[in-house]
Image (cartoon, rainbow, N blue to C red; front, side):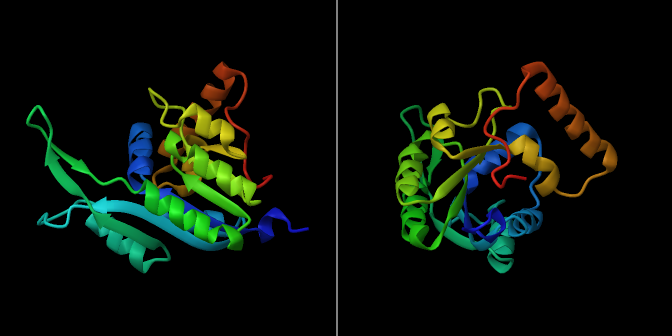
Length: 207
């Protein structure tokens, strides 16, 4: 029987959803540290990052991140976002990547034992259920510490494990001074003290 450290694992990152969760927690993710963190806790097969891009923009703020990820161990899955004007005359962008993520996860399922899904989108509950029927453990990474929480309750309940992004933050956030890191640790301890118990099912690797 395989140990957690030997599990074939893949990351599936819903870029827009993770960005919103990180922004709500006021943390900046270091994606190299993220890869290092999960590489040490399983046999990391692939790390997918999904995002939509507005192709005709002269400059996209997400383009430097996308280019960096593409050259540093991530598999980028992108598509052109569609701009439109709503009934009130407001410009909006539509670029949902749910289908692409779900198709890739199901295609990879036979080659994996553990999928880490970075998203709180409740639409993924059926995907998680389907992956579990194929014998794949699923960890959902999102946050309940924002108002409102970023993770849908039915998705959190369906997952084998729920990992609170705020708890993961000290291991995957950009380098900062010790004072800031200590503030995050204090905030985590205070949250646990007031709630009495930690949300979710704890660390997904038995650590």
